[in-house]
Length: 114
Image 1 (cartoon, rainbow, N blue to C red):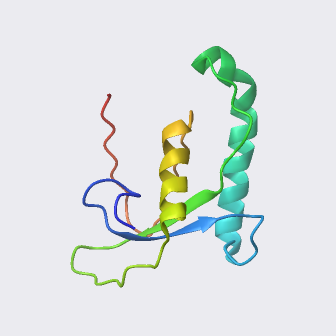
Image 2: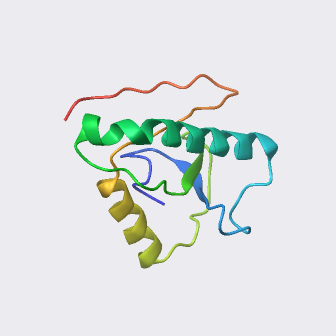
């Protein structure tokens, strides 16, 4: 879906929702990564109020993306307006965002302050 990953980014995306067995990945590495993110969130949670001035009391499902090269073709995945609105609403409200980049290539990320 256009916009999930920033302007001009192309990827296949999928929610990793443990409460929905159909959307949760079968790959052991992805499950372990999702568990690691949950562990990090739990470790950070007690410090969020002091650091951010807000209580962080939940973790949203992960969003898995497979980046595409400019020359790679992909059919758009069907999505409904509720799913898109839910994603953007959650993204805007979130206090902490965790990202993990997994190979085989090398990731390049540029962060710019607001």
